[in-house]
Image (cartoon, rainbow, N blue to C red; front, top):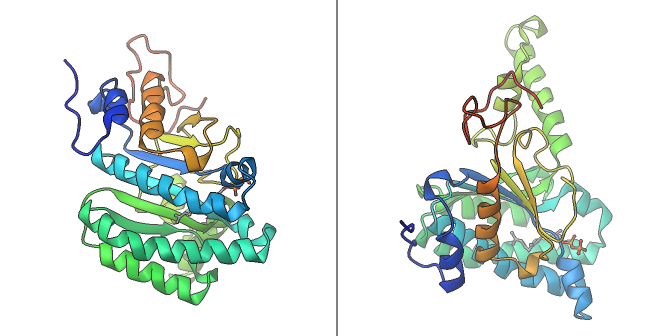
Length: 274
Ligand code: FPP
């Protein structure tokens, strides 16, 4: 029997969706959006034209993920390294683009019942951007559908440093370092993603086979899907293709092959490693 296609999918998306098992959708998808610059270069356009075109891909991906009932989507928008290594003019453009995106998109996020969150060192972003981010988060805070998390000024290594600092600080303020207890749960509770389950699937566009300092702790058991599609050409249908590929994989979490001893998408075993 074919799966009932959720409202709002276009013909191509519906075709791919019908190949999916709706009971085995990933609960959290993380995406490394890459290739804006190459997209622009191939068209003899300035890099910022690629970023501008990338906003439409964000919109399409977010809407499709929400329509098919993905509980959480996390997008790597700007890394900490992006700030340090890109020309000031490009960084300023990206800041403005983010503010315009937030202003324009909040009504659509509300219409789709999507809640917005952020990860990354927000305190280092320009004050005006922080204000717009706060406004958009508050404007969507009561939504109960998909959680959209934007990684902004994000670095996984900085996140781990911040987590260890906050554990040490909390212990120092609560009777001293002899009370410091560090285990996997404690680290996870102190990450920016404490509100999120680990991603089941990470997608990277533009063909690069790297994690680029993205969610290094949280992606420990994620399935990785790399597509050659450049981010400005990515959209809902590509997201669904990524999910179709994910559903072909056997998730083992360090356990045995799928011979009955370790079912597909079984719960993460904290003790097994592979
Ligand atoms: C990577 O492409 C993309 C970025 C650094 C910026 C991502 C921004 C967007 C997708 C648009 C705005 C997003 C939001 C949430 C409003 P690249 O420039 O590294 O491409 P290249 O590797 O081809 O040079």
